[in-house]
Structures are given as structure tokens and as C-alpha cells.
Length: 316
Picture 1 (cartoon, rainbow, N blue to C red):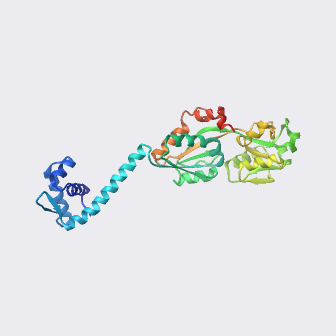
Picture 2 (picture 1 turned 90 degrees about the horizontal axis):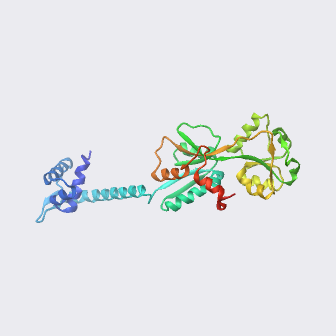
Picture 3 (picture 1 turned 30 degrees about the horizontal axis):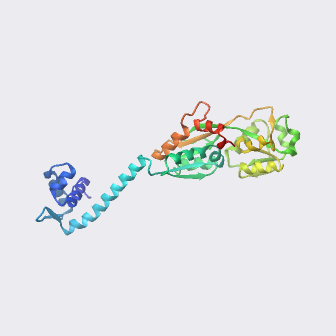
């Protein structure tokens, strides 16, 4: 047992000032209160800490030893308080965020750019992985925020907020020109070579479930790790690719790929910002969350993502 920590504070200032009077002034307490605290500490420790000197008091050998530790601890406390103040002022801190290639590229990057411009002293770490992996990191407290795409399994304590709509499309090159401008039934995909993402993604899970609900089960000829590669395979006429429209937008506009049309609309999905309600976010993470979700409308679009649509710098 080390006793009342307030005694050590009084001891520290008394040793630092070299007098009871100086410590009382520094602490804004009476001299008798200082003397009483020192007596109590000496009683707890069972040693003398000060002896009278010609000018004030001086530390005993035991007091010198104790002061070396207390002064070091007090300095560490001061440094800690300063770091907390820097975090409050956004002059220090870290944010850990999880995002897939898709959410990073088509939503998060301009927000991170804005955040870094505003708070250049904050370190940002991005863990790149598909939606299920991001949700697992968030659940385990290894990231502060996540950017994911629907659908995903609900996890207790994980709250999502929609921030942007996305749309899944089927795209093809000139080899499949016979399907252009035709209204297709999803069953017709069963006779076409298909290019899909690998299984551990929200995009693949969504399309498999949607097609199954329409009586269609596909066995893709190609299963790839990234949507960018799906587009490249489609450009080389290796099959019809299933991707989020953003990945193929450049080639659709240029006419090197075309979009297949179906007699049923594929429901749109969303990008969501997710956080763990069981954990208090850091100040820096809270500021980033504000930027990511500010002015979010009923359709899930933020002011910055809407601006990006009309800004050539961010056009896909």
C-alpha cells in the first residue's frame, strides 16, 4: 500500500521548491496542510524524507531516492496530459479504418484526402480487405471504423449508416455483341461463360443469392480476386463479367464494353460506414466519422460524394 497519492504530489512540489512555503504557494494550499501531508507520507513509509537546512529544507537520502522516482512519474503524467491535449486539438492521434478495394477507391479516398488536409498530424492506417474481414476487425476492436458494401450479416453492436448507392451490372465485349440491346432473362446467363468475384465478398454473395431467388445457379468459368481483373477479362472477350458499375464505367462510356439488359431490375446496394457501438471511438476517429457522414440525405449520398459525381477529378 502506497497511501494517498495526494501526499506524493505535495512531496514532489516541496522537494522541487525546496521549502514548505514554496510548495504551499504552488499548490494553492496552506503551509500547515503541506506539513501535515508530509508527516502522513513519512508515517506511511516509516522514514524521514526531509531535514531542516539553513535555507528551508533538504531531502534525506531516502527522500532523494523517492524523489527520483516520483519526479519521473510526474513528468510522464505531464507528458500524458500534453498528449491528450494534442489529441483534443487534433495535433496527435491515430485512426484505424477497414475498407475493401471497392469502397476505398470509389468512396473513401477523397474523404481521406480531405481529412489529411485538415488534420495532417493524424496517422491514418487502412486495413484492406473484403466486407466480412472488415466486419470481423471491427467486432474485435482492431479498427475504429469500417467501409463496407451491403449485404452483410448483422452483428450485435455494429451499426451501419448508408453513405452511397452502388449498382451491380453485367458487362461484355464485342464477342457477345449479339446480346447488346436485347432484353434478356437471367436464365440465359447459364449458357454464357461468366466471370465473377471469388466467394468471400459481399458482391459475390449478393449476386449468388439474387440469381438463386430468380431460379438461376451459375458456375462461373472464371473466379477472380478483384473487380478490376473482371473488367480486363471482359475486355479480352473471355466472358460476361459481373461487377459494380463504377469499375466498368470508363469502358462503358468509351463503348469498348456494353451492359447487358434484363427483364428484371437488379436492386441497388449501398456503401455503409460501420462502427462498433460497444467501443468509444477516439477523437480523431470521431472527426473522420463526421466527415464521412456529414449531410447524408435520405438516399444515402453525402455532400462530398455528390460533388465527386460532377467533378472531373473524381469521375470514373
